[in-house]
Image 1 (cartoon, rainbow, N blue to C red):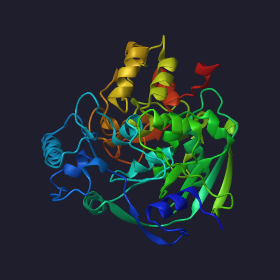
Image 2 (image 1 turned 90 degrees about the horizontal axis):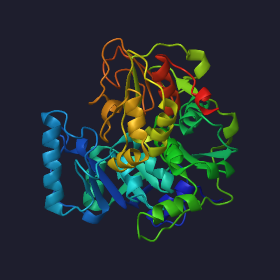
Image 3 (image 1 turned 60 degrees about the vertical axis):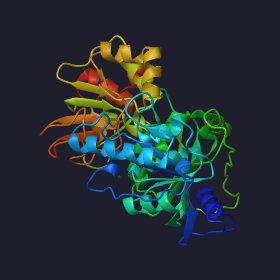
Length: 417
């Protein structure tokens, strides 16, 4: 019996010829990412040794620039750590600032066939580069930084075979909302994306899928390799790449065909994403106070381009706050060059610096009691973006932008005719 993509990656990095679901493996860690929350006084434990400084990345993203004294102190601790161990891949406030998972994409830190760790739950985002990426707890991160290895119990894999292409106005976020609404919880499982429909999805769209796979509760999410992905990574690193394909006789817990041309704009209702998706038409007219486009899942250049297309020549509805947060400063600068930032701000939107910001309720758009938000970020849990009495709907950037114009949840399709 053959192995799936994730099984082959874990086998290679644990120097085993074969692994199967339920096996426990100890694997090498190629990339360990620490972010500002790791350096908070409540969680930081002084690391006395770093296995290999060239395999460590440090990023300030959750509260960047610092939003309070505690986060400023965390940044100070992180800077001292970087200086002490000579870590060159450091993303402080400024030119190369951004959300850690988007930084991985911008700078080619995700290498096919390797293992990447971070203690943020959306670390599976990097699986778009055909690697094993996972969020782990602080003790596991400390161990990986000091020893260069970690361990996993291998889970079964579900294969999603993508066919066809998305219609105009429908995006990868809608694919995710379809998967979450149709198949629900994927706890203890891995997800592998592939199929002929892959060719029609940009790297940004694919990364939205792997990032949002965290909300399916997956262990690992990955794509099979193709030239689009390999060319993307080669343009950002001179490292030798070792892509991994699943075996033809790989054993899956399930294989599911997704017809992309049948996906429609969807919205997740407040407080949950699993088994909670509805067509936009079912909730259209729901009044909103805030609309947010950003996060590691939907702060890409593609997302800002879509927002600008919907907003161009229009004005955000009175009483609605539209906040747009690029995932990295690289994306911000390119959006400036292409005119997206001007279009968004002329429509009445506010474009912030690259940071996690409103997504986690840390800064730049915290919700108050009783407010309603439609977000293109990663989560809509109660209290996620501020007061627990606030209601959070989740949708694609196109739907969020269209809703900001109407003052209520609205379909984006008319903007793509």
